[in-house]
Length: 447
Image 1 (cartoon, one colour):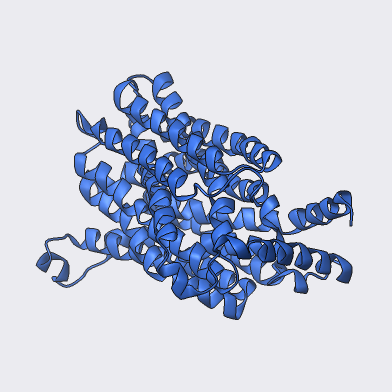
Image 2 (image 1 turned 180 degrees about the vertical axis):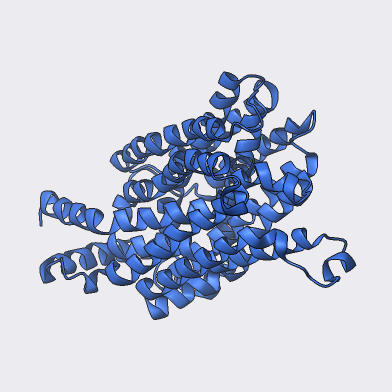
């Protein structure tokens, strides 16, 4: 089989499955982080402090991480199509419920634990949203391993991961516009409309998954039998070639592997920085001198870092694929993010410097993530793949709790609040070195 024939097959696969997966992650990420825009109105309406908001934003990842490994294992049994549909519809319904968070009454239970009714409802819904979405992202990463050999994964993961940037590029101005122009319609506040309107696409895309997403190549009727065989043989060839490198093949081996734990810590360092910035970016940009009620303008400025990230990581992934190199590509991404976080702490006193710092952060984290997974996947296959991907994403995903909570605890809205970005910079840099050291057996061409 020639390289041209193989490339033609994978281009066809990419065109058929990536747009739907991409759309799914766009709406997933939008429902996950739109609370950052809602906070601009909701915090004052419901009397949330920065600490309360930061804790609630982070609690999403507690539910997410608790159910992630089980979710991935269930997907291997029931199939991607049914399980992804369940995930998307359930999180869409929960996301819509946030519009009523100020109406919940807990009969004194909240007061007994030192919370307001609104705070308890917010915390519970954030936890449930994470539990509902658990397994979506690692499930997609696992799903892509059914279709693409490792030598082609960085590019397709980058195409899929563009959804993070696009969700913010599209979602930021839309969210800002909903806050600004829907406020008061039907007697509802803008943040209530935000949660309702942005939940609807999740329900619609979930239905599309059920009808159009094949479980694996064997169910892809748009591929010939010969094309399905070629995909299976190329993936099997790489799995066989990895037998001599200590690849993990069982769930138990994943949980006891020091390398997998190290990769989890490296991944966590990136998610700490990513979600600290993601959930607080609208507030940070507002502090660059934007009027407090200029929500649409805040949305437009928020587009810039995410838009640059979305397109630059594609070029980064292609360069990684062409050179068969993952470690240094990922490490450099961590370093760029660390520089951006340091700059945000010390030099972001204007819109230009602040947006530039945020752009370095998003770019660096985007660079690191698209080459991280092809590198990590080198260390497990078979039954261990579902557990390994879910475990790293689950353990590493706890950074989504620590990052926003740290910012809220220090109080980014107060003078000196940006001090939180100094430890975040050190954490990102440490994650890069952990990744580099824990994968020192990998060399160019090994993947």
